[in-house]
Image (cartoon, rainbow, N blue to C red; front, side, top):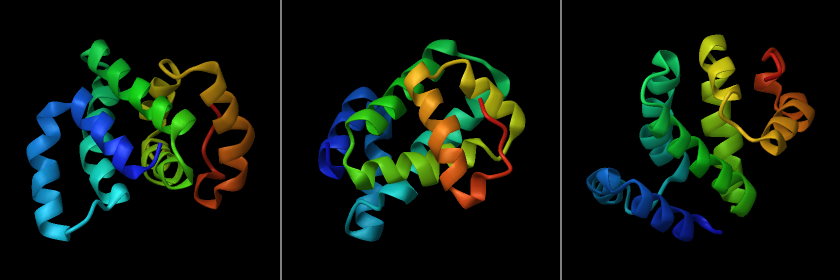
Length: 127
């Protein structure tokens, strides 16, 4: 799945972000995946994981992140690694909370590869 396919699927699952997408495109003239997904996934998911409210919404976001990671091309997977997971790992409570919702395969990837390869995440505890 490339960036265009990813945004199409995202907006189908999260139509409430359609106007934000339109504004983003008007501002930048193209989809800047790292910027866009930081705003529409990181910010709301961080807050949800911090409060552990609305478990259905948390699961919906996590399921989409897992889909991006498992089905995305290199650029989409980079958004997951560098923008989404790196940011969520900035807060230990949020990071631990995320660990409750992710699949075993994503957990193995994070603990066995991402935390070892991403210099900015070397200090992060495994989940």
